[in-house]
Image (cartoon, rainbow, N blue to C red; front, top):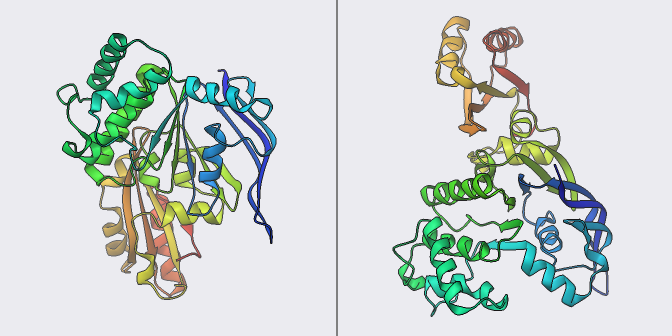
Length: 337
């Protein structure tokens, strides 16, 4: 499979005068055509800086970045603009639609800059809005559309110039859960049906769980770990990976300080629907305190995870853990609650 994004030892430093801020440190990243990849990190991790570089909006860096075989650092500003317009579509959190312009005309905007004739623009824009499920709303103004519909207009606009890559920057952060699910399903369909490479920048595990091939976790300007979504969910290797995955859906502020005897358990497949935990407590005559839990559908497989606090009694604790292991449940002691 052809490499469409190739980054080697990329560094980005901001010089504020008084100090130098190292936003990115030694980034290595390869993405192939047709992949759906997430770059995941907390606020201030460097993911937005990396997004700007991936989107050819910043070429002031050291190291190498090749987009579809083109070395970005060696391009002039005019060349960079042309590459950006031809190869990349952008989907942003705030939609960035022109408020006094219809959905149809918003989608036409990139085609105007590309020099397409008016009749051809209208036909293509209408077809794109039909593809994203807004065929009946092509003449609606942005203030007549819901948040999810606005984002669908933004996605149609991003597809207007037949880009090779869609860059989605926190594209669902402003949407409610049901609307988010619909937008993510649309992106997944675009990726599969059109073969467009999609890169999602996000801080939310729920955004990537069902749709991405791989995820890179970025922290303090470095890629802390990278792997399939299933690998990262089941066994994150770094502290930041654990923070992002294990505390998904939990209210960690509810617990004061570090809690002892805490374990993360992962239920895979059909076992996630069985009362394994209840049977463990009955058969072992012991109680586990459930601190957090959720269920995820990852690449068609159901995974459930819980953070449990086991009894202080060592013999009883070992008995309960062994019971879960015997049932095929993955159990790992954690120290980050």
